[in-house]
Length: 297
Ligand SMILES: [Fe+2]
Image (cartoon, rainbow, N blue to C red; front, side):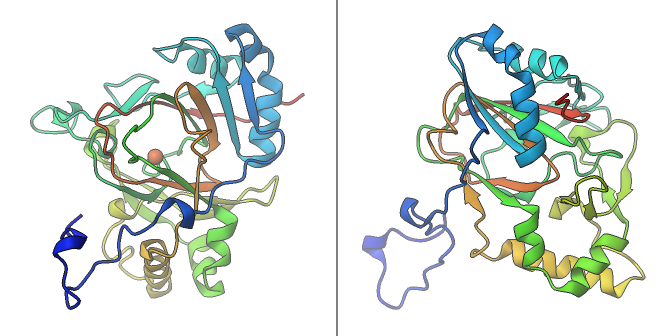
């Protein structure tokens, strides 16, 4: 975006090295053994629920290729409930299933003066590193994505960045400040449920497993992040610098996973995720966010 075509560049043209990642340079996410599944039928998919729960608990990620038609993503909703999770509504006006697709008209909002608000998930722009629902009083620990129509023009690439990798790149001072500071996080209009902001830490440790847990979306933090905590402000600046660095690419989900009629379940706190700009305006993912603990016994 913004760069002239290669044929019209002279040797002296400044070239912005922003979107130069090619397929061969991408590092792909390696799904651990036992985290990829095929569901030949709805019944088999439901039967496998304990195996999905086990993988979600261990690795924080599960992919399931559905071999049956499910254009409305009913299976995903049914599975989540059968697994004992509680699906969350997306806002005061939207239900448990949310369409991630190009929707320039926006959605109804209880907060916006016009009654309409625009979600970033309904635009075509790049979505920077974030966790979902980071502005919620209690962010949903998990989310599911049903790939109904992937981007067939090479856009909408989905990348993940494990919390452990991110933390390993931060200074000990930043980790310490992030673990100890609560920030005021603004609620975007389209997700308004009656509260303008919520307080929460950006980094935490799961008391049961010791896994690092994240909660982050850069554009809804105040600027400066706190009024009276220079160490916390420096930590957020360090985190943002790291995430804005083009070298921080995370890992791309392989194309043979992120394809039509695959459902992904992810631990929303153990990974940041991002997507590149959309090229195919028919791209459609359906999302569900949910609370609870994977039931494996
Ligand atoms: Fe997201």
